[in-house]
Image (tube, rainbow, N blue to C red; front, top):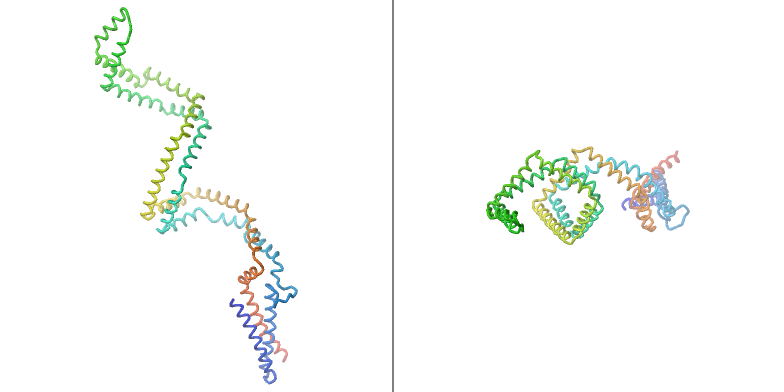
Length: 415
């Protein structure tokens, strides 16, 4: 420690000066006498200040003089005072909380992240870290947990209110009518096909042959079957079906309104059928818990992971520009939504303040534990390394001031 050398040197200078001037005192005249008085007072001041400084940390010269080795004697008081100062003055809860509320943590974090991601190596490091996280994801376990949770939700869900609202929305928005129109359009397309007419003719002819009717009715049926071949019968049935279905597509027709009324009645009845809804819930839960569902979800999750890893690798080859673009978009959004960010800031600050209030006492415990772990020598060395330099200047100042005071006192003695 340079200041300790300087302090020791100042004391040595005073001692040497006093020794020389004492030896020359007989014939040295007033100048030697003046210097002797200065060196004498400087030597006394230097020794006194050396004793005072040393007494703080140890027993001077190893002598157990009263009121020396003050720091070690008062170690418990020192630790208590330091902990009390940290908890109540330097790091009190109020000052930390007030400081946190002024930091604007979210916006500051956004700006800092953008500055950090401006460098390509940082973007690549972020992408590499993300790849590691994605690769280590337990996809099978996550899939199993997801399906198990979904099955539990399906069993416990109240479907009746949901089904009633869904049925009401379908009727209110006219989706039932649109669904009917779609089904009728598909039916018209199917009936209009030549193959459909042929199939209808073959089916009708076969069923006529199967009829077992006697008497005049049997004669009439056989005559009709002989008169109508498959093509004629198919064309007739096709025309009848097509005409009937087209009537159902006409808005306001009696048949259409009756069919819509029946559809809506069945839809409402299904929404109110608790037994059917319960069976539907159990069926859905069993499907979610099946091995097929687990295999399907796991395969899709693996596929998604592969695509995500490929995307990350591709962005890394391009320098991570998408990462920077995404971060800038987040920063711009934060800047454009001050009210939203302020709400987030308040919630985040409240959480941090709660954490500080709940764990503030740990600061004192940590400081106390660390100080108690130090033995006497380590504690003295630590304190001397922090404040010893300034204390050594006391010795230098004592020697110099003593020297000057000695000069003044010698001159006063002359007067």
